[in-house]
Length: 480
Length: 95
Image 1 (cartoon, rainbow over the protein chains, first blue to last red):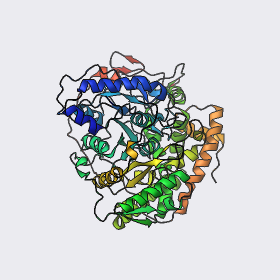
Image 2 (cartoon, helix red, strand yellow):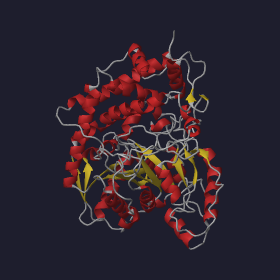
Image 3 (tube, each protein chain N blue to C red):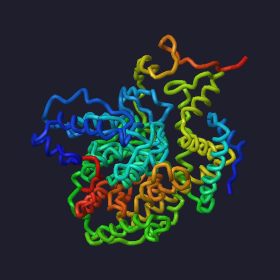
Image 4 (tube, rainbow over the protein chains, first blue to last red):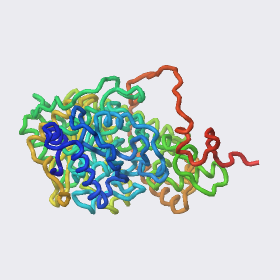
């Protein structure tokens, strides 16, 4: 079997019985065993002990295995969120999206590494070691869905699920040359997703092609009664929008900040400008658009996500599950020592900030203000979508971080989310796709952002661009 | 500019139920000051607008029906239990 087969190619091969589901699952399992030690993409690999018996592929993912991020519940598996505090916690149930993947016949081959509780942009804040970028192992694959991205980029599995709160699917997609979707808030159920910032958390597929991404998104989508923020619509098939052509007369707005390039790495800027030129050649009208409130996106995200995180992570206190500190004097001591020992520095930083912005003297200045500015950003984006069909920008301003370097400066790392947070805080979807490599061969991505429920338009546009370029065919060396 | 002393950090840490070492307190004081100073740019926004929730869903109720969940399952991840009915914790009140 060849490595780096897409879901589409695997489906074809399985349907024509060129390979059996069992062969396929064993093939990917072996690749994971071989290459995971050097990448540390998966915290734990699962032996595929229950191989499907049939060879008929009436289930959409039979014989097409994948990986799930360590903060998404898999029944009876450790779900540690990359943290020491949950390193012994076994999920008693499947997340809804896990269940949907299994019902579609998927074999899940492991749980992927991540920044602790999804708080990070490089994978370096995992309690289980950093993950390496297959394109350059001294570099980060991005975060917090570091392992999911690295595994797919190295062709160890054809798909993996990540989660995103402010950029944690799209930025790794960009760093690893993959396709990553942040869906409309509520499109995919959050039941079983360990909560970080409940008002922006969403799962997102990571794949090497747009078709594969739409294929997985279709399986995940659909209302779930267990998630009260779940959009009340049935699941849909996004692959049927992939005509290969851009929608007629499409107008795409490019953010002025993206054009003037300040703070953007020159290689990112060059690839992005080439992508714009290419879109024009395909028939898109590209116009510059000024959205002055977007620059507050990072600050809004800082405040709201950390406030929600402080609340969501209050439950990890050693009482009901997870780690408990030893030699404690009393209950309060147990809480403080457990959390002090069990959480890493980044998580603690965010909890402290969250409680600060919610505390009595500061709540109006920070939290209430941030909620209002979020509404302003929302209005600005909704108005923009009256003038243009989609927005376009680089996904992230930088090239993949060097491991051990950029993570020393928290604020600089946070600014990596500049282009991804505005649509996260407004619950609007966006897709990141590759647009080439830097001079030294590092992947660069760009993204389309759309109004709520515009996944069909996003997928169609992304597909038309992808199919008229070869970037989705590039693979890192050393993973044959 | 926002400034933070270790005393400020210690007080928020108490609210957050977190034990921090002196080194952590000092590092966090510096880092949080920097981040919060950046975040103060929100003060430049003067427009008034009503905040909105992240979802348009309202009152998503389920049937008021009890769903059983066995005690073993509930207790299976607990650090310390008793009689298959209790989570055991250290002393709560001092005499």
